[in-house]
Length: 166
Image (cartoon, rainbow, N blue to C red; front, side):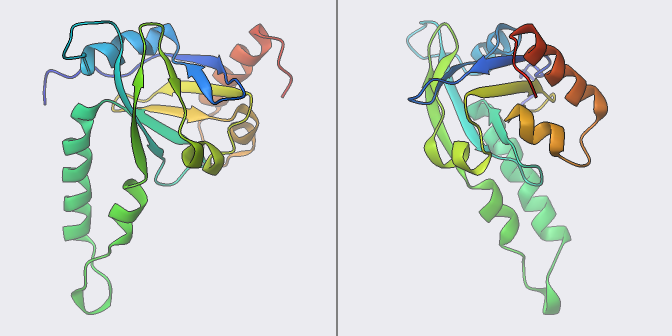
């Protein structure tokens, strides 16, 4: 789908005791454009899943799902286990996802298992990576290996703005 807009932007959302959080405005507009509601009202649908290799979540619009599936099909075709058997773990990993509605303010309820898996507590750091949005627990991000320093610095910046110590 060439008409999708890339996700660029970042921000910190406060997660309430029911798991409600708001997508930062810089990412919300793109998400709404990529997943408009059929009734024309503000908001849309976001799919929340787990990242394939990092201890965080990914959020994307329904239009990215066929792209993701095609990428997984290609990976599965190119990587075979012993004796040529396909590796079902690629799709098992990516299948953890739940479509949830978000309102005009970008608020949505973060699904329980993905939130638990990524250890997201009272704060959620959102970071656009073109195809999707990563959602991190800020402390987990600081401890993660293999993550660019600029992404960690961005999280420290947003936490400092809200008086959150890491």
